[in-house]
Image 1 (spheres, rainbow, N blue to C red):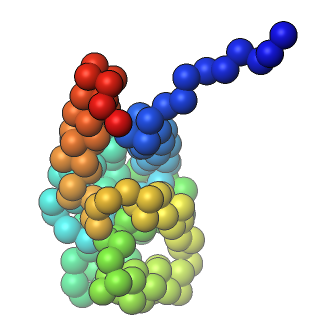
Image 2 (image 1 turned 60 degrees about the horizontal axis):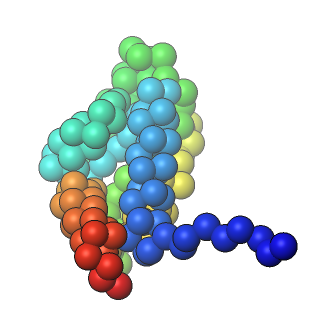
Length: 148
């Protein structure tokens, strides 16, 4: 008797599943950690997915640190910041500068959620909804019409 094999999921279905898992983890993490994003558009995008405790990166940098410390104290969050910056080459240097600044002020940085963006076809968080809609549509077409 051979093993029963499950039908393999296509790439779009796998991406949707991993995106869904990432989103669930992000929602749960946002309850206990502050999230720092680069732009207002990214904040609104994350809020549309029910992610909370989001701080937008504004200059000067000392304001960011004060905002993070205030949010942590006010909402009784853990002193670890989820840093969600764009994943293009230009933003990489800025990511490390902000990360170092946050760590110099006694907070820890979690970059795990940002690493997931490298596996997607997007550069920043403002494209999450469009990305998801595109891949759901592709997945449905493949399943319904048998396209590969």
